[in-house]
Image (cartoon, rainbow, N blue to C red; front, top):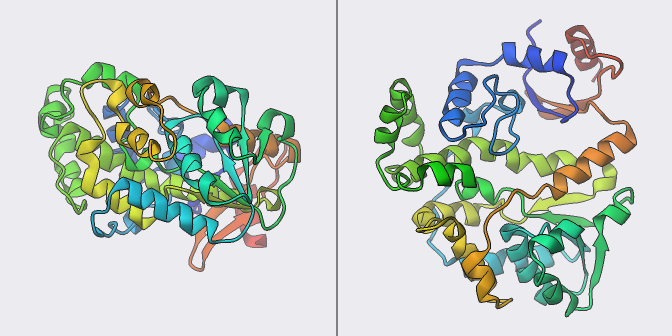
Length: 358
């Protein structure tokens, strides 16, 4: 029997199975692992733990199954944000907003709060540290706020909707500061020049095939990075929140930025995502936040940082519930989950037996 296609594995995956996953990497996976190294000095050579964000290629459904996103009308970001907020409020269910303090979740929270009282904002002390003045905006709505560190073991109600900022990085180029510092003077240069200068000439033909699938032209180095994280990594991150639905206590998880309207906005406006300094990255998101919360210092100086609120929540819940090894695998009928033998090690034999028992 062939080793099954694994679409998701919990982050507590043991090293023995990681090696099995690496040995099963397809030629496509190996290409993507190398391409990710172009955009990150910290990329793991085995594709098991790549930076600038933790993305495991061997947990990914094949990128070929993701259709090219539709190119809808070019609406303003403010319009797309407002429509998405109205759409979620129209669900008429309790909304739990996971506000990390970052640019994406701040825009999400700012847009939703004026539209409903049926909302709770979950945050941490780090959220306030990252964006100290926005908590005043939240508090003026007199809605419930919960400090996550005091409540991470609590379960959500079945009808609750958890709203996160996941997928925003994947539609905006996931531009980490280390790459900006090293390459900011080259981001608007032809991407082929950068690949040639840094010894990646052999990747150019395959990249041309990959980049040709974009509905808009890929010409610059930033365009290339943007499309890589948009098209490839979006396949994984768009499903990451869906993964949490397999735990009933996580409720219904929705990514604010994971919808066709945001995808299309990004396709039309990728060139507006960067500027002359790192704090200009996602400035257009910060400007959109000003529709609801005016803070010019935030617009001018707030930089992207990695916020791990959702992943930290999941890590603790996984440990608390002893759900170390939850697998989701691709099947002809869709996606199925199974929990193989958990202790002390997971063998390939145990995985295949568990699949038969599903």
